[in-house]
Image 1 (tube, rainbow, N blue to C red):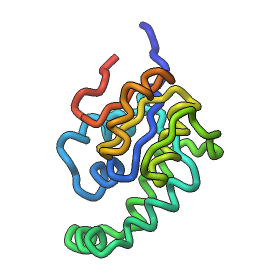
Image 2: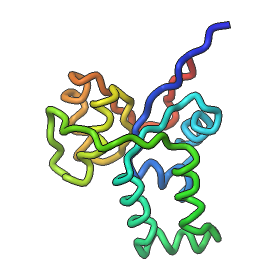
Image 3: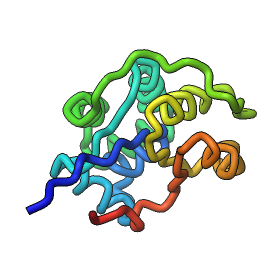
Length: 145
């Protein structure tokens, strides 16, 4: 039996919200991959801080209240599944949205798959490929290997 190393992935904040706030069906394969250990989720303390800040936004807080889901539960998923990394050095390519740069930098540093739906990130697909980073906004096309 051959064992595969876990796929290294960087998840932007909207993807994390899809996983545990919105229960996006397209995120189910990624959630399963995280829970089974076949995905190695890389993140930084700054990414956790951003998630905590976004969870307090009125439209997100309303969704959490509707689902009777405390923000601490979402942060608990982050803490349980993530492998914290130090902030990454600046990647060779800059994103127009400075808030997204930390995700790009970390993905480039670790040649990890980057999951994002952000238009500023998606338009960088070819540049990121040159750095060895696969950009995957679609959660239902995860590798099953």
